[in-house]
Image 1 (cartoon, helix red, strand yellow):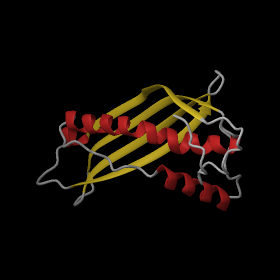
Image 2 (cartoon, one colour):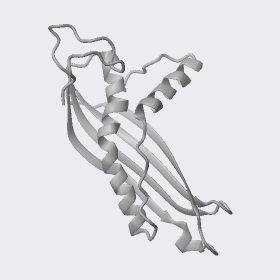
Image 3 (cartoon, rainbow, N blue to C red):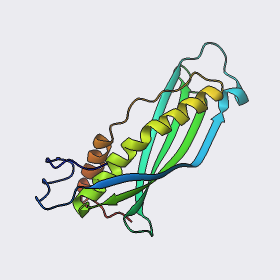
Length: 172
C-alpha cells in the first residue's frame, strides 16, 4: 500500500516532489492471547436476558529488530452483562498483533500510521474472531461496530496534552 501524493491531514504536509511514496505492507497477523469466559454457563441467569455489551480497546506499537518493521498490538476486552441486573454473561479478551513493514515515512507520519492505519487494516480480522468466538460460546454472534481509530488517536493526543506530555510519543 502506498500513500498518494496528495496532502493528508493525518500524516502532515504533502510530500516533497522528490519524496518516495510511503510503503505499508502487512507481513504477519496473529492472535497473541485469547480468552473466553462463559459466565452464564457457570452461574446461570434466570429469565429473559437482554445483553449490554461494552468494548474496551488499547493500542500499542513498537519497533522490531529488523529494519523498518513494527509490531502493532490491539487489545480488546469485551464484557456482556444483563441490562437488568448487571450480571456478567461472558467476557472476551483478545490480543491481536500485526507485523508491518513501513518504508519512506517521516517520524511525524510514522506514529499515526502505526496507531490508525495499521489497526484499521487488522480490525476486520479481530471482528471475525470475536463474532465466531461468541457464537461458538453459545451466544448470538457479536458483530462489533467499526471502530474510529482516528478518534481514539486524537483523544490520546488530547489526554497527553492535558497531562503536559509530548504530542506524538516515540514508538518504543
